[in-house]
Image (cartoon, rainbow, N blue to C red):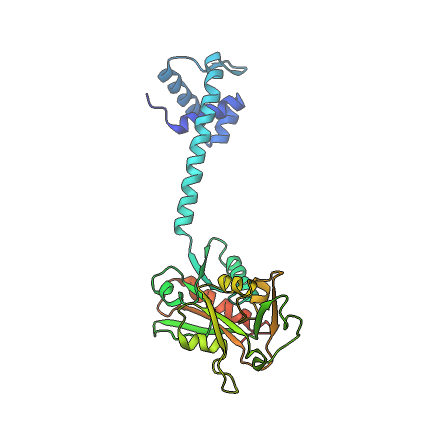
Length: 303
């Protein structure tokens, strides 16, 4: 015996209304059609579900027994439909995978993501934290669509890079370091310090961040290395050395064990927005434009 779900729904509505006219109106069918469907259901089951008279409609004992079961079936069916709609919605929704390197573009990153979510309320934004030198590989592999990351970095022709944010570089020390209370510092004052740096980083990039060589021709002392900004700052907190970072790190990675002192005499860091130049994702173009527009409104932007 097969009882279609629409007939189960007809039964439930009639059991609630106990009136063929009102029930039929709720179901958008005619009263005779509803009566015919209920009679057919009773014939299938072999018992009367409703007592009908010219004055009233009442559930029989069998109808009362069936009602909670029918409601459960109806609720389960509604949940299946709701699940199917959400799957279809997620499948059809545009997706933007955003990669972040270190502190990325600070508040601009958050603002660009929020603006994109407002512009594309049905879109799915996925965030991914990248290592210092994962930008190109992750973009080309499709693991991310756009990446906020610091320069300088050499990219192949297929990768598009746009400067959107410029911020001072800062010295990161332990909070009990002799420089910790300074309002600013010169790079030459750090010549006696040991610097922790990125593991297996491209030499020209690491040299730029460490300001190697220095304006006076000296070379910084290098110590332990780490493959992430969290690892670098753990080394600084442990007293293994000091580090140079972008100013956004002072907000993103603030902790009691660390101090952040601005440099007053070295070139600022530039944050770039990376993407594939030939991407087919329509959200990438919109995100680029949003980030560029927002960058023009912030005080420390590239423009």
